[in-house]
Image 1 (tube, rainbow, N blue to C red):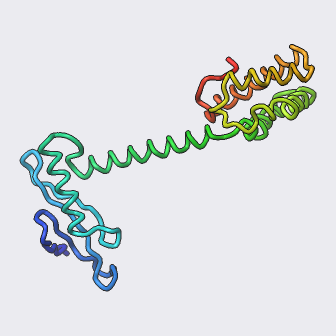
Image 2: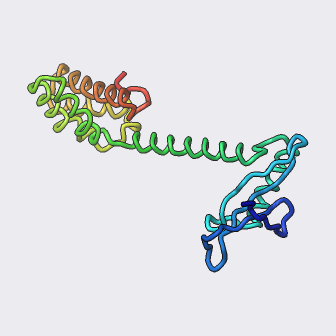
Length: 199
């Protein structure tokens, strides 16, 4: 059965009615836009009135595409427009995920993914040694900081605190080694993508 198309007050915009579905008290309307591109007629569907489309909104989209066709800039078809919007959304989601991952604190990562891996890969005695260093020295110095914000400045403070607390150079080097390993694991898991501040 042929779909019956209805004209609107906006040139290049028309709609058809859904057989049964309602949008408020009226039957739902599906809007399309029609235009010429490279001398050929094109018609592309936009969406339903129940999705927020109106004849006026459809005409705005049509006018945007026509303007882009004149200037040869920006999307010139709905397909191109949708592809750009999808790409922008993917990039925004990727950035949001990256920002969320890198906002994780050193403490949260150490107590989560790092310890889980360490307890699998290392001897219990080594794990306990690292836990002790973390609890007494590393956590107070940098534990609450997001990993992306930790710099050499904060590590110098850790070294100074340990030295003032009577810790040997060897213990200080061990603590820095633990911090280095935590960042390396975070980079491997793509939780952290910057430079390792320990070097």
